[in-house]
Length: 167
Image (cartoon, rainbow, N blue to C red; front, side, top):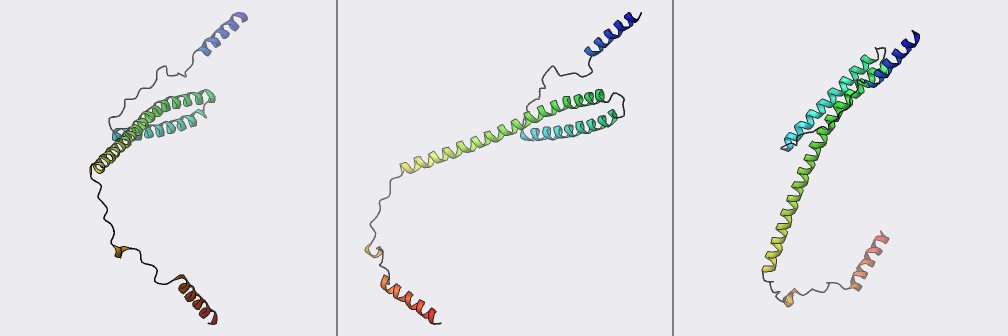
């Protein structure tokens, strides 16, 4: 009788170990790409709200778990539930952020292409224009020599220094 009981207990324990209440996702999360930046911003705002709700639910579950006898099992289930929720939230955030980055890269590329086209058009316009001939400058426009020579400026400086020393 004792042998049968031990055998049945060991079978029940083995089967109990095989059954787990924790499930893992077998498929990947698919997120539809947004149609505009406003859609992406709205999806990101929704993801933030979902993340906040998941964290709040986890905190409530955690508090409940500490009142139960099997605390660790309960905490594991709460963590797994939060983790599965965060997988979806992170997937949404990744897709939306990637879309927004791609939109900004595309806008930058368009701006660069436009600037390059404008530059090429300006270069072509300048190449097509004849180079204006420089007219010789008149003699009166020649640089004038300084009004005072170096010796005169040194003499004036010496006088100022001497006047400042006598004061």
